Image (cartoon, rainbow, N blue to C red; front, side):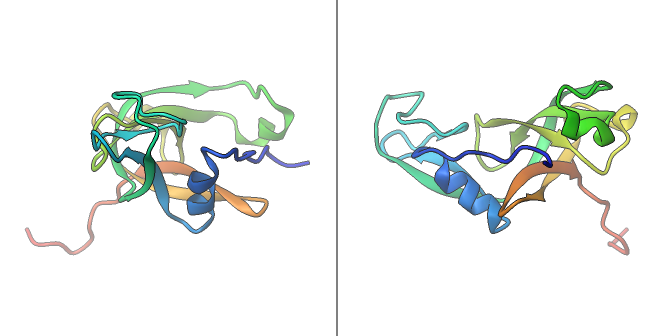
Length: 141
């Protein structure tokens, strides 16, 4: 069967369409200008009903993480252990995304560590996940 795929609704469709294109999109309130995630019908801050998709850089920092050593769905059995984390987005203050961390040794992850988005293809779509930012090779000393 494969790993589950998202089932978009009227509020989250923009997010999953963006992910399929390799873009990370969150909502921004047209009234108070605050960002929010996950997508909702109203602004969490001012209850305005006019929310606009906003493309963000996909850069963030690790807030917290846990490592799962048991697959709670059979299609994840070949992925254990895997890291589930909360990531604060750099350019969307107040947005904290629940996600997976990939391409990293869980024991080396630290709070505040810089991360960047990457996308795992699933079916016709993609799932945003995060990985540690690679150090720039050959940069100025």
